[in-house]
Image (cartoon, rainbow over all chains, first blue to last red; front, side, top):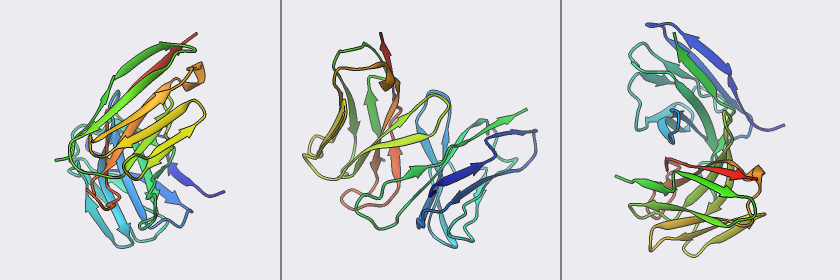
Length: 114
Length: 114
């Protein structure tokens, strides 16, 4: 089955710790994205990558880092510099050049800071 | 800066009734997406609207796009309880070409009462 997987589903972080969220896709999509969703709000773009070994900051990149070493994988690290990381994190992917450029989303990771 | 506004933010409606959700955006774009999100879940793609006057229908939902007015509507016909969810519109930043970078509205929480 083609799709996007995220792990873990739930993650608890202590103050001052870095944590890494996994995102993998087997859709052969070029582009991948990370969004953050806070309760009762829409999605905000953290980082996105159009091709391997290249990525750009989104609207709220501070306190986060990413890498794109493989087409299938786009991990997100939430660093200790992110002061309010408790949120629902969603990864998405899309074809880079396609008629619809539709983004497909993974199941999400819920991060809680203890 | 592109802004995307949805209204209403919350909609309580009775089964069998019709209603419309509105999505306004502030700068030129000819590519708009509608997504559905169930509580605690990820986003599911509903519609992709690519040009002025585009209209798409799936079951009891119909979406349209007026790029001149910078307005998209999601019309619900004869609502049923299964349609209860949060609905998001998202606009591509491209202004005439696709960038794959989406700005999401704040969402409309729809509750269909029996």
